[in-house]
Image 1: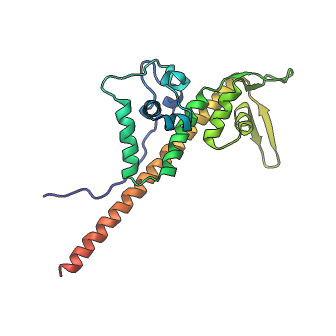
Image 2 (image 1 turned 135 degrees about the vertical axis):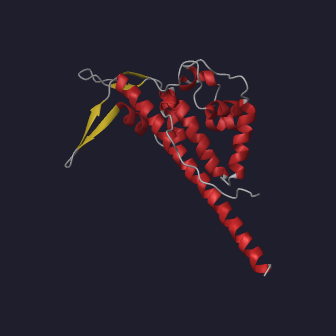
Image 3 (image 1 turned 60 degrees about the vertical axis):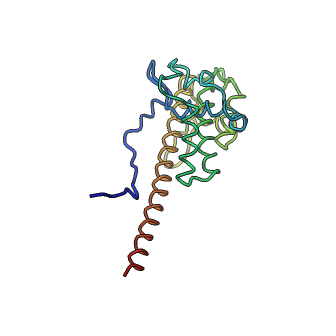
Length: 217
């Protein structure tokens, strides 16, 4: 029997979210981040648009000290990623949103915290406001809203919502939880988007097959 695959469906299975913020010693984070950094070096437009530097510039990448892996060409892989998105019918605006999300995660990981201004509480605030503004701009929100989400948490019941400040360690945990959550949601969206493209291709092939049968009668 001979045949050709004309469609498919992808499912998510056990995405290792912790890898986004704490890659194992001697191992890289997800390759797409290094691909993006390589793409920024290749294309000044990518570098300027998403404010991307080299892997060693980012805490989420440099803490494992594994920047280069034998047999992996990040420049070529970046080109393959762009080509694959085009083949899947992912529009330029959607591609930019994906890249912007990845860049935002890297910038988010570089946000540092210090003791806040409240002398009576163990609170926190962002130390490097420039990195806060950079991450916020990539996520399409304000620096104030992002800092608030990191440095305090909401406690709600049926009648009211209260706000409790985070200390420095809690703010760091909130930063990492946000990065993992954003990456996970982006990954889920991308799977759905690819499946949508595959379903459309499958439908097109079915219609072509039906037309052939109709005209061959």
